[in-house]
Length: 473
Length: 110
Image (cartoon, rainbow over all chains, first blue to last red; front, side):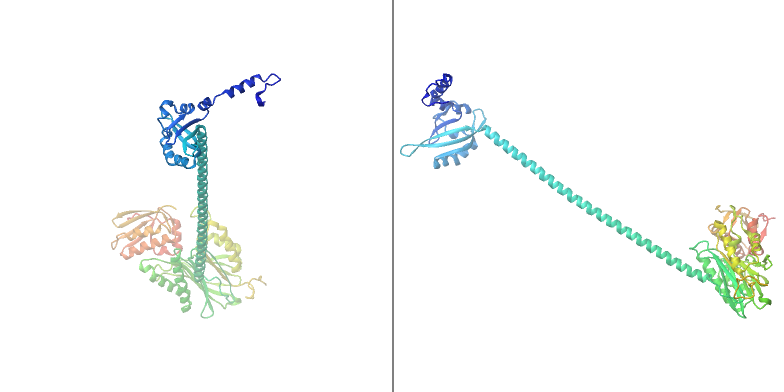
């Protein structure tokens, strides 16, 4: 497009372009200096301004007359710019001869500031001596803004980074917190498990204690009532003990043992009260009777001894305690294996006899008194012969006082018991005890007291070694 | 369980205690305590009016025996009055009808 020599375009359409190019060429150096898009100034070596263009005067709002020859370059700068000029700019310029792109701030007339980039070069004379300084000033407002924007963004990024860091720190703290909470929960869980284990151990311990106590009670109970009876030649025996409360020592007692002269003694009774006090009374009663029966096999004598012992021990001291008791002695040697039984009773329900002919009758012992409440208490006695097939049944009042109805006076009673006996006669001791055990079970809740049952009889069979065989003719 | 009530009345011949309710293992000790506090003079008669008694077990009988014991210790007498039929049956069974003085009514004059 631009041709050398400025020869007109033969095509004829380049006339306008040529005019503009010509105008540009005609633009004077003076006008270019004054109106250039940057500031120019020239100063003496001492800084006094010798020449300054209109652009820079306009930027700073100054009049040429007030500047040229009157002001130095440093006078146009802000305080900070002046300081930097004195300490760095001027010395470096003198030393290097030129400086490029130095950022300074100039003062605008009226108080504003103008950020600028300054380049300067020292002009030397032909002899090499410095003559003046030529300085170019670029308006750096936009660039400063850009830098400020950069700075702002950098700060923003810094802030975001700091926030991210803060968030990271907080997240870390939260993680640590969560970890601690988890550890705490773990500890609590372990604690709970330990407590649970301890509770288990305590329960096992309590269970063991209860088992041990139950075992001890069972042993004591054994000392009160034997769990099995000795075998008696020519007699069949059977026994049953119903315990109303498994954890309470019973107040009923019985025993069967040999005494002098080939005889056998037995007793059965019921002490007043319940629990350990009743048990201690039972123990005293049982061993007193056993000892007394050895000294004097007459049942009434043994019972009188027991009465005296209990009265002295308790009632005489203002603490009445007593028992009901029936004690008997079996005298063997009768015809066909029959035995004579003598019994003595102190306030005890009458014994029941099931005969081989199918009848059942009580063996009354009238006049007998509770054992232990009066010195020299009256004792009721009776005697009977048990022939083969006859069975004597002793019981405590748990049986006859068992409730059979809703009222407290709806009791099983002696009449019903005799009828029950007649319904089963003839029957051997084991058979009778089995039937009575079933009867006790049928009372259910109505049976609320300990109940002892003792039966002894002469087997109907001729051979005492086979007591359960059927009678033969 | 019927609560035990014990009403005390003084008469010319001695104290009368009206015992009503259940005389059982739990409540019999209260009768024994009350009787233990009774002042009795020689020759007096302690009357236990049992007309309101609804139940009496072996603990109750023990309390009645303790009352008799207490009276005898003071050289006084003890009487059971208006004994209910069921208790009378038990007392007879264990021979205590021979030991206690029994009266049909609680009035000391009768």
